[in-house]
Amino acid sequence: MSRPRFSGPSITSLQGSAFRIPTATPESDGTLEWTSTTLVLVEAQAGGKTGIGFSYADTATAKLINDLLANVVVGCDALSVAYCWKVMIAAIRNLGRPGICSMAIAAVDNALWDLKAKLLEMPLVALLGQVRPGVRAYGSGGFTSYSTEQLQAQLGGWTDQGMTMVKMKIGREPDRDIARVDAARQAIGQNNALFVDANGAYSRKQALAMAQAFAKLDVSWFEEPVSSDDLEGLRLIRDSGSPGMNISAGEYGYDSVYFRRMLEAGAVDVLQADATRCAGITGFMQAAALCQAFNVPLSSHCAPSIHVHPCCAAIPVRHLEFFYDHVRIEKMLFDGALEPVKGELVPDLSRPGLGLTFKRADALRYEV
Image (cartoon, rainbow, N blue to C red; front, side, top):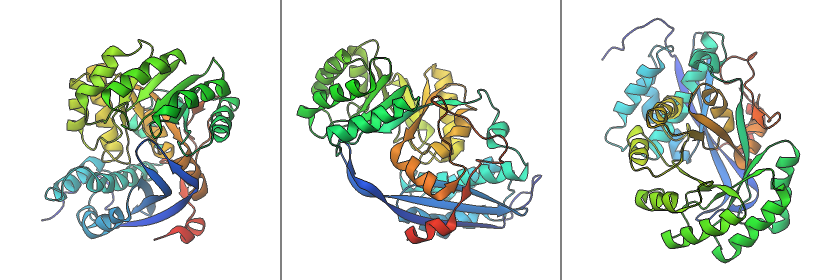
């Protein structure tokens, strides 16, 4: 079937590749342990420009991009990102929308937004419609594998650099969690916000008890106190917890239906969405529209180099996650990865698209 022509140049090539980067040290949270992170990169070409996008996913994601998605995207109009997104969604119908399929679409969609902005010679945030000059960032790490000294050094280092919000992992050893959170509070002082993330490790009763204990340490954000699939449990913690403690979840959302159900259930005070999982910047902006309709704030999950532009264009965004693992990788492999200034990430309006240049020579040793 011939592809419709709109107003822009045709996409001439689309290529996915994967890079596995070892972590600085073994890491863990409440429910997972890891020693490496895989970045799946997409490069899309049209009109003499190359757009880049990525996801953090399995190497199988790159194979899906090259074997299936490239076939439906190449030849499409590079300015018609929504059309490309639509044909990718149709192409994975029999494979299932959640998981690898949505992450593959995300990597391509992010590259296509970067490409479109480059073709128009403008920063992506201007193309999306900028509503704020910068987005507040919170330092995120504090892995359960860290010693107390490592935890305090990392979180305290971020606040010393001007960040006013930090997040740590909990849930692997519940008996130690209160002491670890207390140590984190001591490291960052009383004037900075402390967030905790259990990654769904607690039962409902455990989470309720922990919420009461964390409230005494002025914890203002409790992420995935129970599984994000347990909407009734999230609602229970939200209704029973401290008025000053936001309950959040949503990072495992792959489509708008997932986000709508979470919002309809009243399960969260702040919804999270991840443009490297929820079918790209297109999916992220759909989540933002839902948040606006439900009058619930939105926070981006991980991958700060992808999120800074859409976060500065989405009205309900509250803040952005400056996740240690991804920050480290993005600084290693991309020129243009941003650093917070007075606790904010501000897009570089002098650079087109996402403002990133892939450092291929530095990445080759990690390619798989």
